[in-house]
Length: 632
Image (cartoon, rainbow, N blue to C red; front, top):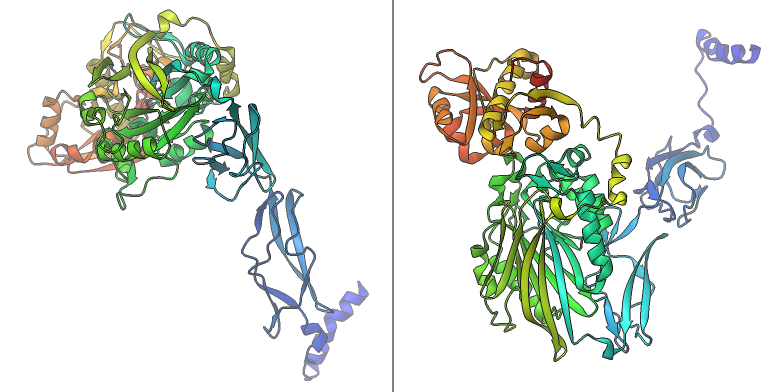
């Protein structure tokens, strides 16, 4: 304590005597200062330290110093996880330091297997089509245990390792004797579309039976296990949004189920956009199959495809090469909330598919080309059922449809088409009879059929069912009863109930909506997805099936003409206060984001709108029902 006190007094004594404080000795000026830390300070385990960008100076003179030493050397392998301080020193200078973080290495995954996975003895490895992800990023600086000069000399299964840093993933290829090629075979594609998160088995009305993914899984897994060389499973899109379990997990429970089932490819649907691009872009990193769309581009230039989408994939099954090309209904943005769809461009896919088909036939020797489109119109794709002048074969051998939720099948110019309803009510099948002729498979016959899932699939897959336990913290209280309906409701009647609930909520919680009072409310009838809402208990899970969309509340400014147009349009269900709304005077109304953001409706139905992201129409209805505002 005495020493500290004296040290404190020394400068004061000099000052009081009028003397100058002595200059700092040269040695005391030798303090290192980091002008610029290294460009890279965050690493994944087993990466090498990179000191590029590190700049050090004399703190007093600002002279750059280059002959410093560091406590870890450039190029050292960072094998230990955690945060570390690296010391920078030089001779008798006072040292300094900077920090780095070493994180657990990201997972390496096979996003797409090579196009060719079956070989004859004597052929060389072909890695064309191999796509590898490091975390959520496609990477190309990986190494494989066998390179493309490797020649297969023995029959059997060959395992190939893919490594990057210290991450490793594997895939296998089959090598067979040439005489083992089947001269004839029967091949089947199992197909689901517009499943809308239908995870649970339901029987809500006589014409609305859903098998549920936990039961459908048993059927599909058995089919693939029993004939893996002649079976693939496809999804036509709109796979995640809609069911209570799937909505609660933002699709993750459905993705896990698809991975257990072993889907081979999925077509992008409009409802994959419902939760925004953040979630959409993350789906492929979780799926064990590619997410496909050949005609989805960013509207910023109309030519750049999002890197999380692939235009096609090639699946090889015991020497049979199947190309799958997927696309969307032209101008699909009208079926997506406007604030999201404005960032994307969906042109016609016809010419794009023709080009890819020619490439897959001529450059990749595909025997079958399947066209899967999130579009319900088979006639739109008539051109693709014709013969290409480049390959002298039809552009597609099978056509898979979606989007309008119907069951349909038939053929165009001998090309079979198939759509399998919605909500997991059906699983479609497309069968091909093939002969091996002149080193290729040729289609000799094809047909389609559909399986009603609720009636036919009665064995639960416990692997899929156990996913509820995995997500139990997110799937909260699905059986909570909101109210008991005393009678059946039509779609339009239930939509009108939602409209009343929205107006009630806004007017009773004005602080959430800039103290706005609304006099009119509208909700689209199509937003109610069940034709008849039956009397009885209405639970959270049932409500999600009836009303699956999470559309935010929007406050509109409307004239009396705008309101009159909505009253007269069957597209809308409306509710309003019993007040006089004078012609030409703008008033406030409430609607949902899907309506307000749709540019097709803007000029006819509103002057302007403000969106409130924190409240959805479903929130309003739940609040309305739980408060027991009126006798339903």
